[in-house]
Amino acid sequence: MTAPGTAAAGQARGAPRRAGSLRLRLFAATVMGLAVALVLAGVVLHGLFREHVLQQFQTGLGLQLDQLTARLGADAQGRPAIDPQALSDPRWQQPYSGLYWQIDEVAPDGRGHTAVRRSRSLWDDQLVVPGDVLMDGALHVHEVAGPRDSHLLLLERTVRPAEQPEARWRLLVAADLTDTWAAVERFGHVLGASLAVLFVLLVLAAVAQLWVGLRPLRRLQADLQALQDARAATLGGPYPSEIQPLVDDFNRVLEQNRCVVERARTQAGNLAHALKTPLAVLDQAAARGRPGPEAELARLVGEQVALARRQVDWHLARARMSATRRLPGQRSEVLACVRGLVRVMEKVHAERGLLIRVEDAPVTYFAGEEQDLQEMLGNLLDNACKWARSRVAVRVTRNGQEERPARLWVRIEDDGPGIADARLTEVLARGARLDESVPGSGLGLAIVHELAGLYGGSLELRRGPAGGLEAVLELPAS
Image (cartoon, rainbow, N blue to C red; front, top):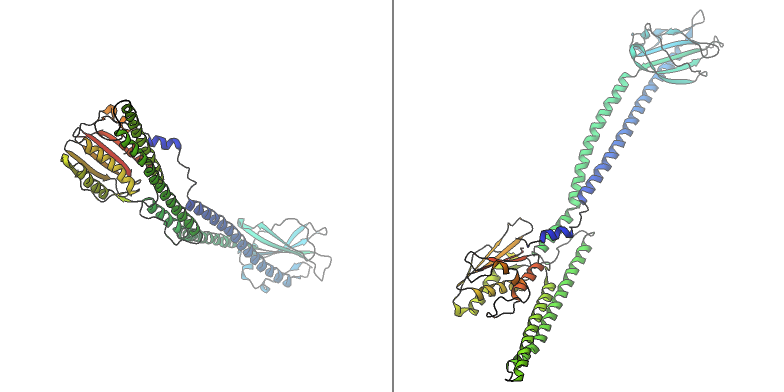
């Protein structure tokens, strides 16, 4: 049960906004960092491998060009010639094998090219290269289209035969890049799959690291929950060096708070004794007033003393309630407190023969000070016994053990005359008394209502099944 308006008031005040999960922040930052790093690594490694393979391919082709240059000669007509049998690689003789050579005659201006010799592997095709100007001995590298739409890497060099210094011949060697690019593509696939597996493993390692690294925070959360549920008085330990100073400071604050509460309680008790004694003397003096003019004065003094006593009781109760409100680590057994108070009430109201019945229930703990619990239940039981005709029933229940927040309810019912529905709220006002014939100060229910509210609970009064008054006290459970 919740006091009317509590939920609305909580929404009006507004709950503090969560800054987000630290675990999710760290995990997202780690995953993004790993993804960026692995993608960059994949691009760089793939580029380096491609460059290395192309360089190796070019080096091998350069050796072929050197061999061709070494075998270059002139025939009887002074035209360039190469003996095919002098070349060691059989691919020169196989049509469209992917390895080709060609000899061009260069015009005097260096721009005109005429193919005069080519390898058998070219068959009826020719190598077509850009019309660039080469210096003697210079080496140029091109990627060109070859026979049957192949993609070739071509090396060219210009030489002058010793027999004809005025002639210039351009030697061309080309090889198909298809297998090379296929190897580069296969490497890219393997690299991508490997980096993906590495990414998964690193993410799992990051999850394990976060789980281990944040485990002390989860333990701290459990200890705080135990503190809130009154299963512990301080935070346990030890914790890692980064967290332990915070825990120590928090425990010191708890201890200081207990000391302040104890001093406040002591001062409240001292003030109560200091004020009640003079008030009792004044009350006794007024009660012994003489007839005549002094009687009116005695009556007035008695009324004011009673009023002052009620005010003192009320404000001292509020001061003590504010001092003891929801201290961490507090826990009080409800049924034990109820049975103790019932024994007291049976003695106080023994002459009336009241039957006070307490229903059996599982052991339930109130998350608060035992003295406050006795204050609330004592006032409710005393009120029920004053108005009951013959019977008072007490029942204690709570919600599920796993439910949050944990709550308990104490229902105290009597078979008295009850209270009209229109006046149920009125009796919770401070000092309100519906019947002056019954002794009391009119503060009991108001104190219970106020104290329950300070603990985040509530007090509800309603007509019971037997026609009397049923008081339902809701409090936080431990």
